[in-house]
Length: 392
Ligand SMILES: *Cc1c(COP(=O)(O)O)cnc(C)c1O
Figure (tube, helix red, strand yellow):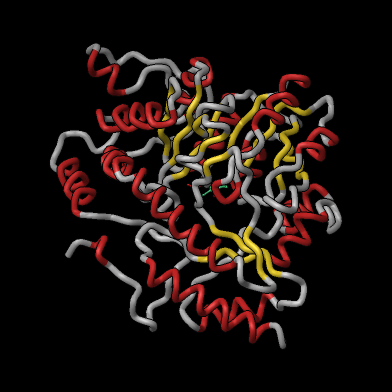
């Protein structure tokens, strides 16, 4: 069976908030790598890297084992070390902060703008100190940050601009591709993201020094890869840095290459679903989608709505789940999690917009395999449950 034909038509079947699309071509490509001589450190990795670099229109792309590993590589390449500060939005996934901590740095959590949940440039600037070395902008939900504004700030203070674009493969800011704007841009190929390799990640950059540092970092800090050594018939290599095994496999890259061919279709499908939601919700009370700036091309990793304060989010969440709608919440602001709270003595009130928004947001299912019947079913269920939850 072609697994792309899997449907969620049956009302007993849960529609998740995100899901991969795998077809027979993907499977054939993976199958053929399994029959080849290279399962890792082979030709597919470079092929996948070149294809992503070409897609986002940049010079270098470095493939690694996850988006988290990609963030760690970027922090390492930017030379973030002990007590260096890196500014990040609080409304993000744990990995955005953790990659800084892995290198002994300190993530500084700042608030977001209420209408997009993107990092608030003014709050960012207020939090810059002598120890600030970089910022990680998160293209939340697939909406690119205001990169002109961010670049102005990083230029003034001499900071490295890293983009966590794990939500934003295929997005554009003022006509430019996400992946070609920041000093380094990070993507994830987790199954809920735009294309998948099972687990996987990529960093794109135009800076050759960053690229070389990251290539060593993903391979134990070794200066010449095994593939190059076998090509040149030598065993000699040097360990120049402390690195990790963050390599991605040939199997994953074959899948990634096959998935990338379908990315334009996947993006169209995501945008079609978002449009259906947008149109339907114009008529709804108590619920509003996040804002979209008109100079961007949204990649819609997530479709996030904000509920008004009359609606009990918890009860709406439970009701929709009971009807098989796998709604989710992205994210609990990072500064409210015990680990960061304890470590940095943080408390509620640090990022009031993120905290308030967190109480009101809901992510609705959006992924390319959904058809218009699924979307309509979700719209109808949200409509019914909203009426219900208004009385709770
Ligand atoms: C998915 C994601 C990551 C991490 O990616 P993995 O591939 O799961 O390690 C990092 N940041 C954001 C914002 C993400 O959504």
